Image (tube, rainbow, N blue to C red; front, top):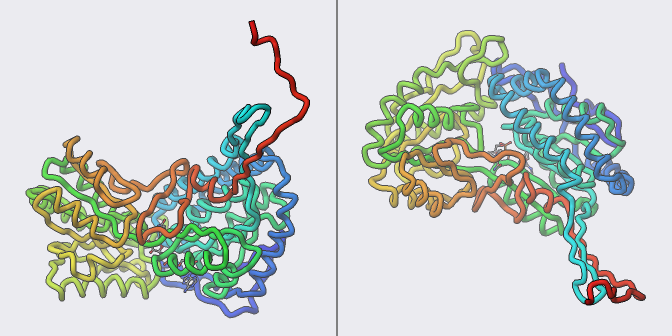
Length: 493
Ligand code: NAD
């Protein structure tokens, strides 16, 4: 069975003696490895290593730090297929989805390669007579990253490359459901020439996280996961004096206007709702149809969803959609759909009974569409995180925006229309941090911040882009005066 070592101070440590939790191949239901439940001892050792490595790493010129990431970029590209296969094996994404997600992660490494330019400050000469002023951006110290199961490569790559490029050292705690990809990512950075202690990897759950949140030497925490845990991380981390950026869960609305292009909208809705088996924080999990849009869109959408082939992603030939992460998660998704029926909604495309004879032990749910969903139903309020699309019918754009804006979350929202006026109204008024116009999944790329609002984000500075550079650095403003200067007559006539 695959082992799951920690990486502390440049050494790979076998943690087999610790209690552990199973890591599944969701396509087959088999246990493929055990994730050790590390705790205080491992985290303290990792933070101590990161703290010891910080002074030298901080002094390493940004161009040299960037070179590490140029090499890393190359190694990720050379090992691209292995990374994608690992994502597929421990998470269940199709290979195409795994490739897309690893690319999104790679772009963050490429962004980190530009760190010398990103770290440049401002200067103003002669702020007052003979006085100059400049800003510099300096690293914080030891930063930590805690990541979710749904993007085993991309989300860790959102965090440690930029944090390290800024001159910090780092402790990564990946999801205990998918730690194998994180191990490969760290191995590749080690091969790129990573100095000892600069990046450390620990495994486990709450005990690990709590030690990071309360450790006096950890200066900043980046978190991505569900909303209750994000809130907990933010509250506990900030109470212990740390900077925290904590991305939470979501419920994302896609408004379909009657003038929307039918085939393109159906394709985008299907991808947004069922891509990655719905396990995306930016999944378009609710379609709000406006007026006649329900009649023009729904029949074709239902037909498209029924054609989606569900199956194992680890057997060579690729299905359209893979499994969800665990049997327990599958059962929760099924319960939410059953609950919606009990509350009066109509299941118009039912993926609950999907059969996959080639992989009878896999955790599968077929594409499911629930129509006539009302705002007060549980399925309208809770994040399902599975291949389930709610349909809510509204009479006009005002109603649609009001419905989307009543959500506790605020990650993404999209509109499909051919009307510039409707699109303008929507983008201006909708309460979400990432907005798509004829784009179903407006997830941002590395150079733009991942701007969740409300219960989708706790903190001030978001992950990715210039905001992340600000998050991982502190500004120093230096005001200087040198005595003995003289007024130059050259400028006097
Ligand atoms: P999760 O909250 O269960 O776990 C995330 C991390 O927190 C893991 O590393 C886990 O070990 C740790 N954790 C879990 N319970 C904890 C506890 N009680 N105390 C301390 N740490 C704990 O999330 P998940 O199920 O792995 O991921 C899915 C969730 O992540 C969804 O809600 C999804 O929307 C969200 N997500 C959000 C974004 C975003 O950018 N907003 C991106 C990806 C995923």
